Amino acid sequence: MYVVRTQHIQSRLINIDGSALKLHVNAVTSSCVHCAPPSVQAGVNIPSGLAGSSLLPLANGAGDPSRKDFITAQYHSVFSVTGEFMIRQGDVKLIAYGKNQFDWEYPTQLFNLSRDPWELHDIAASNPAQVARLTALLEADMGGQGAMQAIDARCKEVQRDLFTDFVYTPAGGASGCQKFFAGLYGSDFNASDAVKVAQWLQQPCPWPAPAPPDPTCAHGVKSVDTNPVVCCTASCGVCAHPSAACGSRPGGAHDCCPSIVEKANNSCAAHPAPCVL
Image (tube, rainbow, N blue to C red):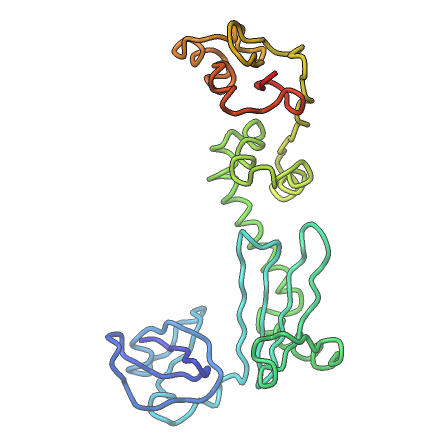
């Protein structure tokens, strides 16, 4: 059995097969919760430590005097620099943030959802007492003073460990860090981003500066009997076909086969080898 949030943030009790348990809509703000069926159908006690409460009082229309008049939520993602925490009570909703690991701190936000359902107008600055009250209520519901930052820190630690175990280490650790992120983000990822990755991972992510242009192929190997003349990387030893031979040289076909270098059309005036003279 589930609690389903409707378009108007009302709750309707339904059976697992989707049929209505009772044609009753409880017009109160609710969280989305998965409940153990016995707790709803038989009113048995919920085991300690298990989030949630019996929905039997709501199902039979008696109401629940222990029900909170607010809801809280939290959001954590590896794609976000910090966790987000929310509390809604009545028409007002407060959003608080964990500590940003890199740059500025995100300020707490406050919205009046009856007047601003799309949360476009932050009214926190003009309502400091409301912000303080809701922040304290949110903190208490999360476990007490300092709980939000502690939760956020734990989530960041889990995200870091998962990334280390399943991405950073399999990619080769420090030696493969640049290749992995350059392949993932291309030229949008740079040395300053690598510094942030290293700070977050607490692992090195070296980002050597790109080699300077080589307009005369002074640091590479010129091709033989090709037009135009191309510059293969020095590790190739020889810059010539046949393809089977040049593809097997250190650097591979991308660096050592003149026709592939020519097709890439990177001018040596602006690029290091492999490039076109």
